[in-house]
Amino acid sequence: MPSWSDKDRRQYEHVKESAAERGVSEKRAKEMAGRTVNKQRRQEGRTPSARTQGTGNPRLRLEQRSRQELYNRARELGIVGRSRMSKHELTVAIRNARCRGPGAGGGA
Image 1 (cartoon, one colour):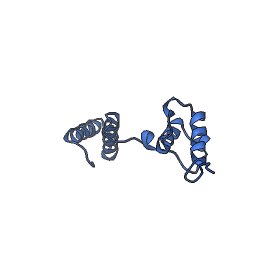
Image 2 (spheres, rainbow, N blue to C red; image 1 turned 180 degrees about the horizontal axis):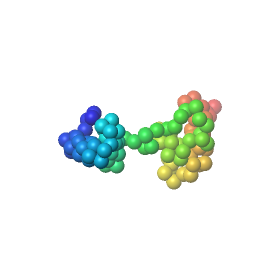
Image 3 (spheres, rainbow, N blue to C red; image 1 turned 30 degrees about the vertical axis):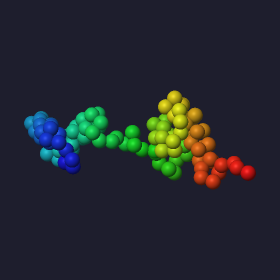
Image 4 (cartoon, rainbow, N blue to C red; image 1 turned 135 degrees about the vertical axis):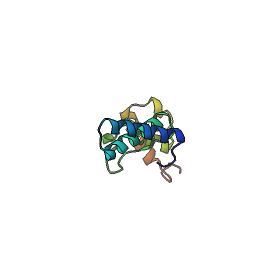
């Protein structure tokens, strides 16, 4: 129960006891209770979720990543206007940003 509030601990115990009363094994009841509390914390924005944090598997091509993963990568790269971009537009913008990386500017 890392960094859970008192309310989270009470909810955990309540869900665990409720599941046990329904005949669920103790191990499964603990798992259900933990998942329930963590889901609630994610929905309240008290903990980051994989969807809002991840940039995808770096070994996958950009086209194979989700729009949300591309959006997160675009945010890291500081791409302007990313919230209005489609998945294809994000892919193109990320590729262009990589090409313009440090030292890639065109000065004479």
